[in-house]
Length: 250
Ligand SMILES: NC(=O)c1ccc[n+]([C@@H]2O[C@H](COP(=O)([O-])OP(=O)(O)OC[C@H]3O[C@@H](n4cnc5c(N)ncnc54)[C@H](OP(=O)(O)O)[C@@H]3O)[C@@H](O)[C@H]2O)c1
Image (cartoon, rainbow, N blue to C red; front, side, top):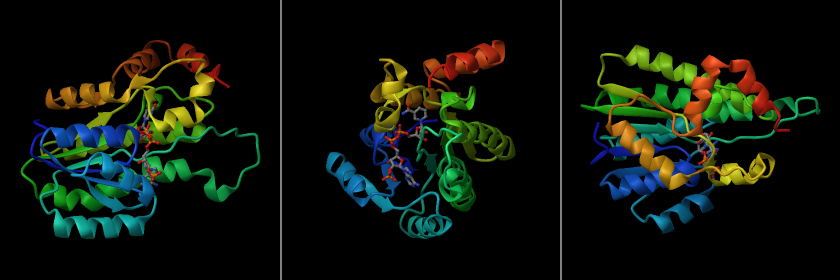
């Protein structure tokens, strides 16, 4: 599948993996639309890549998704690629009291959001001769990370959902790809986790995206670069061992 001359919507395209993907796709001759909550972050992305088309939209809000769809269907009817990338990751000590209202925010953004985006955008994608959905999960979809229990649950759910979606869309013109990044050098990683990882470095984000695009063009459907593949394989060969190793991070 060629990643050229496509019209691509990336949720959470104002930072990190989404922004780098947007930049490399623009360089490859694609039309790229991005979403995010912060107008400031969106504008700063546009200063870096003036060709970007911006949509302020919160993927955890159903009404934002409906209105995003209306705008895009009206102005970009050739949209043929949806990248469900927006995500947040928190350290959640479960023994501490916390408000029930915000407890599941990571599920709302990382899992419910992509499910709603797929549901809402399917009619538009179905109308294209060759469409693509890319769901960004994580190496932690295969082995949970005890300090981030809600995130781990959401990403395992994303993996399961993506497999089901691919099976249901088999034989249609829509391909479904899962990109499971390893630790990657982005603001998400630096914000809370870098300090905990005892000097461990993430994959440079430009390297991750180059690998991902090569794999997509080669027709791969589950893309697990670097340590993600180690987690995937270890989750089958030695699931208890690898979970205990990750659980040493506190
Ligand atoms: N970095 C890693 O080590 C790593 C590893 C595995 C998987 N991933 C996954 O890769 C994806 C991107 O992560 P990243 O590292 O690039 O993070 P990042 O640099 O923090 O970027 C996250 C992006 O998502 C947007 N976003 C967050 N909540 C949103 C919401 N409710 N609605 C719309 N947009 C929202 C952010 O913009 P606003 O805050 O302005 O909305 C931002 O543009 C995530 O799904 C993450 O789980 C990352």
